[in-house]
Image (cartoon, rainbow, N blue to C red; front, side, top):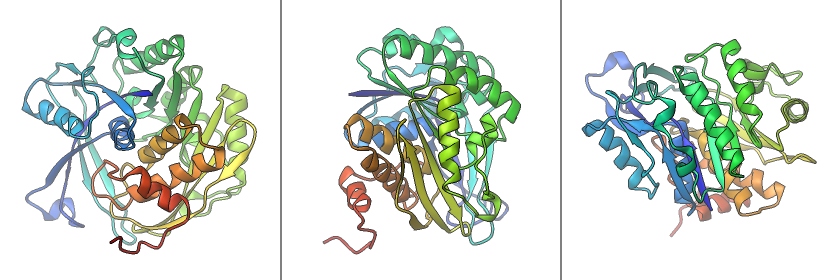
Length: 339
């Protein structure tokens, strides 16, 4: 089993702890990005994963590549070129103060990539699954067309294609997102969204829900999932459901529609160490479970548990094992010391 993901790997800069940007004179640096996060999670689960992007040939670009290699991700299809690595600055929220992300990714190597940079026939050799998110086409330039070409090539080779809608209002408008994502959707088998994505991208909204004030009508998301399947032809839909008590305490669950029946995971109450990468870890858990032919209830429990655990891990990458996820998925949420 081999999974291919495609997107932008960025340099992540942030103050230590809960300091604000304006308080510090130094920041810690790591790397992250939606599709890279999925690739690393899958590698940690024992799945062969290949990550595709474009990065400069200089030392920062090489450091980004090295951040993937250390986890066993195949980086052989990464294109080298361009002048800069995209950056995002992250300030962690606390209590009623929300986290804040500031992007500095204009003119990055991948944002200026060309269709001919990527040989999809070669990239997909031996692969069974292709995963992409809405973040990548949102970067503009040639990327909307490159993403469409990649999905078309994946389908022609018989790969399962999964899409995380991952709408980012700081990158493009809802109108721009819908225009491009509807084209990509025609090649997608499994669509993944959070509680707002379907509304923001496709205009499909859950009744009786107010995400800003932490009110989720979970039953309403059954209708959202069914409408997505009927309108776009997806075989399966998964929707993560987050209730934010504040920046530190969230409740987390998910809905999985396998085309026939609906399944909700148990709800996890989380104290958040780092919420970035939570949706990506859910995607990885979903892909892993489906590839291992788990039953639908087990698919959604494993994916939800993997994501819950990510919220306890510093950085973008989900540094957990299959055994740790299974323990939580089976109901052991005590957090008792293991010795």
